[in-house]
View (cartoon, rainbow, N blue to C red):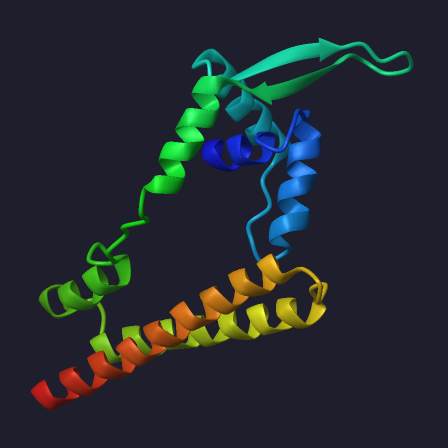
Length: 171
């Protein structure tokens, strides 16, 4: 969340609710919507670390609002983030841990675990398909997010099939 907020502030000053709306508009309904409280807490932390600065702006008919802007340190942190690669190997997978430990505990059947997980992935794919159909066609970012999630789910489904084949050979 913190780097996403820095990226939005790189465009120019904004207040917290504006940033929330920008994230929602950019990412669409498929991305978990941030809570405005979480955004303001994160902005406070970014300000304390010197990555952004906030300025109170008076409003005549409403309470004052705080508008934030990126500092040089914030811009540098953002540049460093864009230079990093996203390295997230899936070797620490909770489902796989369940699958590996099931025979040792005697509390779950491996094929039943695979089938349950497969149903979950298929349900998630159906939900994503509905979201994609309902999403604004012009929001390419949201469609790419949904497409990426669906491709990951398809790969997970293929992997589940491979696990099932392998386990059935062992029986």
